[in-house]
Amino acid sequence: MLVEPAHSLKGEVNIPGDKSISHRSVMFGALADGLTEVTHFLQGADCLSTISCFRKLGIEIENTPERILIHGRGLHGLRPYDSMLDVGNSGTTIRLISGILAGQTFPSALNGDSSIQKRPMKRIITPLREMGADIFGLNGNDCAPLKINGSPLHAVDYQSPVASAQVKSCVLLAGLYADGPTSVTEPSLSRNHTELMLSSFGARLSSHDTTATIWPDPLLKGQKIEVPGDISSAAYFIAAGLLVPNSELLIRNVGINPTRDGILRAAMAMNADITKLNIHETSGEPVCDLLVKSSELTGTTISGDLIPALIDEIPVIAVMAAYAQGTTIIKDAAELKVKESNRIETIVTNLKAMGADVTAEDDGMVIHGGKQLHHALIHTCQDHRIAMSFAVAALCSQGGAEIADAECVDISYPNFYRDFKKLKCL
Ligand code: S3P
Image 1 (cartoon, rainbow, N blue to C red):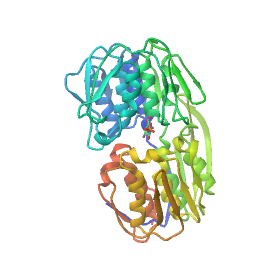
Image 2: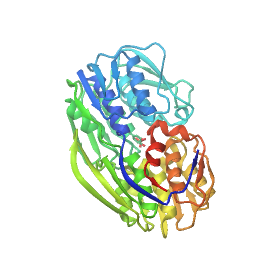
Image 3: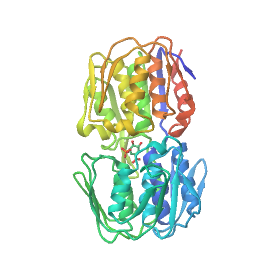
């Protein structure tokens, strides 16, 4: 797909539902008693994979354009599925569902696409085995396909070596089936949607600093959930509104949970003109509208505890940095290497192809901004966030950019190109 340069972006955009919260609404709804009703659910391929897995585990789920209805069967109501559960491209699905399946009384097997089969599962296998789970990679390499023989689980205090909400959530979900309170401590706080949402379903949970603790065997009750707009999807409009001259965008309904709002903090440090309007709460999550105006961005350093709060936005932040004046340093972000693609490689290769001055590091990259970028063919490696980030890069480049496998945006934002086109002023 050819994305052409834009002279100006004007108007409003309504951001689709948050991916992390959409996944969890189906999972927790399945484990609750009674009906869970979800509005503004993200109809992206990843969340549809979660729906499909839980249907195979015996949960009735009605998916209509207005709402999702999940007919929960309680903590012990899942049914065995005698074939492979397919998680598609979704790391959140495979890692969270593994925690749930570890504590069942039946065996399960999980697989996904070629990207999922390369992603590290040792990070969940290790804590789950500490809890007494029988889980292993069927190819002997700690990757999917995974086999899980459900078994009784012990409570643990797990010190996670990575700040990962997927690892934390996997262990907390296994903790629902353990014989006492289970804790997870992480090096920096990752997104806390599991803690917030499971509490609202009725679980007993506590959070202090970077430790979350869950008590087993709660009575979970079906909920009404309105999913906030996904700040990770808003990120592309934030970046485009800042970078394209003469732009003013109102991005509506954006979740600004402090464990997710790192892009706003980074953008402010880069001299961005962003105003939060209409701040309110939706289903226990802070939400606002963002007014974004074209800005002369400057370089910054992004590191440490900020990284988990913007990990999925680093591709588009790197694009912002390439157009900013001065140097941007991104470090402490080795996790980028184990996302849907090796994002240090995919960001650096594609920025270089467009003429940017960027160097890959083992845990990030250094970007000397301010060069005029030019047309290139973007190799997305089927990574949705690379496709969307470089569509933004194309808007300000000489000659735009050709995005290969452009349809991979379906994973998290099926209407991405359509929504962008509406804002372009010719
Ligand atoms: C997610 C957690 C993050 C994030 C992913 C969604 C979640 O992954 O990158 O897109 O919903 O818990 P990690 O937990 O591996 O950092």
